[in-house]
Image (cartoon, rainbow, N blue to C red; front, side, top):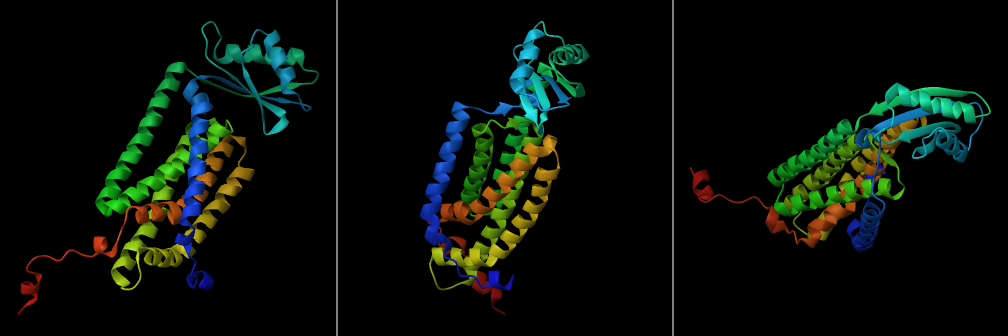
Length: 312
């Protein structure tokens, strides 16, 4: 910790490289969202989710063939943890059975096609109307969170800092969601909750940095804005790295040992914490510099007649 406090790293000297790096990540995220889209989970699309286990490793093609033989050709099949565990998602369609009837039909088809024993482990059903409601409510939750943050930063900071914090926030959320679109990772309610948590984490980290920058603008008499921001970042880097490291330790444990059910949730938080730490150092601070912040913008405003009030 002592060594971290004595650092004199020229963070802003690398701001152009950081801008290029962020621009590339954002471009990839936008293209992935536009071309591939999010792979919405059962919570948003509705349908039936069935988890089955086999005695031995099974190929997905043989599972699809067994379902097609049973009259269920349009299904999404994927391994769930190991090659013996299979997750089957069936979209809601007119004429399809639902709930226990559909799960019994799937289980019978797989048992008839499999060489060994098949175990039915889990069945979840979400109606299309419920899925639509969850999609709408989830979108509104994110909208309200961002709106509340906009009001908060507008009241707390000078407008350049407020805009910089919002830019960093959009940067983090867009890259996190873009990763899920790029690799077609299922996006469900736990992942949406993780994205909302990333919004809070990113904003908190940025506020700590901005508070120190604002304080140093008023304390440090020598040096330009870049020098003051570099000093502030070096003073807060210990806190930033320790907080991020301890958070990542917990999230890594969830990702590795938590099981497939919270795998996507932990992944979203891990990506969000890493990107949020990076953005609070480079994206937010660089945005403030590009908007031309200066010491004069942050000096306390003197009230008229203050000298007279101080006279006996």
